[in-house]
Image (cartoon, rainbow over all chains, first blue to last red; front, side, top):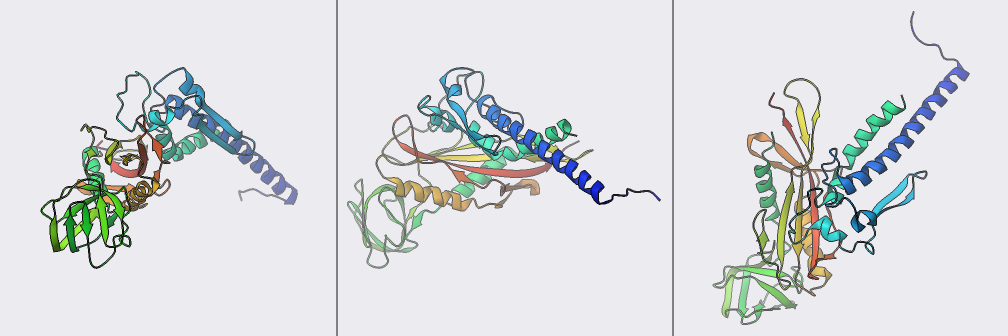
Amino acid sequence: MTGMLLDGPGFRRALARHTEKVNRREGVMFRNTVEHVERSIKFGSETTGAPGQPVRSGNLLKSFFRSGSLRSRNVTIAADLTKAPYAPLIENNPNDMQLRSEVGGFHSIKITKINFRWIVRYELAVAKALVP
Amino acid sequence: MLDNHAALLALRNRLLTTVVATTGSTTLASTVDGFTRTTGSFVDDGFVPGMEVTPFGFTDNSSSILKTVAPTVVTVQDFRLEEPPTPGVSLTVGVPTIRGWINKEIKPDIGAWRIKEMFQPGAGRVEGLGSFVWIHYHPSYMVTFHGPDNSGALPMMRMMDSILGVFPPMLPLVLAGGVVLRVRSTVVPFASELLNDENGQAYIVVTVPLWVRTQNTI
C-alpha cells in the first residue's frame, strides 16, 4: 500500500506550512504586480503591450506616484497633475499629436489597465518559482 | 492570424450604430432656425441642447447643433431651409459627423462635435503546446469624441453612455473565416472622465477591451 498517513497534529502542521507558503506567494505576487504595473505605465511592458511614457526622464515620469500600502494590499498608482498638467494629453492624445520620441507612446495607463489580468498571471508564475 | 483591418471595420461599423436620441419616423417641419412637431416630444425622445442632430428625409439634411429643446420645438445654431410638415422624416443624434478614422486627418473646431478612433492590436499569447495552438489577443478599440465648447456635461455623458451601450460585455463580432472578436467581460468597456484638450475643448475617451482567439499557422 502506498500513500500518506496524517494524524491530527501532522495535518495541522502541513496545513500551516501550506498556508504560510500561500501567504508568502501572495505577498511576493502583490509586490511584484504593483511594480509591474508601475513599470508598464512608465517604461512599457511586453506583457501588457503598453509602450510606456514617451520620455526617459523629467517631470512626467516623476509625476507618477504610489499611495496606499503594500501591507494592506491597497495601492493606487496615479499621476500628480500639479507636476505634469499635460499628463492626460500624453495618455489620451485627443488631437493626434505626432510622436517624436524614440521611446514610449500614448495610452499606456489604459493599455496596462485592460491587460492587468496578464500581469497577474505572469507574476503568479514568478511567485510560484520564487516560493516553491 | 487575426485580420486586424477586418476587426477595425467591424468595430467601426458597430460604433456607427450608436443612437443617442431619435424622433423615429414621424411628421416634422423645418423652420429657419429649427424643427417643429405637433405630436410626440423632443424632450421625451432624449434631445438636449448641445447635441448634433442629423435630419433624414428633408430636402436639407445637413447636421446642426441644438440650441434649445422644448417638447414641440427645437432650435439650432445655424440657419436652415424652411420646409412644411412632412411625414416619414426623422431627427437623429448619432456618432458625430466629423469623423477622424485612423490615418484620416480632421481639423479641430471647438464649436463642433468630432470623433476619432484608435485600434491597438494588443499583445498576444500562445495558450498550449504543439502545432496549431490557440493564440489569444487582447486588442482594444479607443474612441475619443469632442463636444462643442460650453455645451455642458449632459450631451457628452449621453454620447458616452450610448457608445458604451453598443459595446456590451461579451458582444460577439464575427469576422471573415469565422473568427469571433468579443468585447471582454473581465475588463468591461470604460470611459475616461470629462477632460479638456490643449484648446480647452471637452473630450471623453471610451475604451473597448477586446478578446480574440485564432489558431497558429504552424
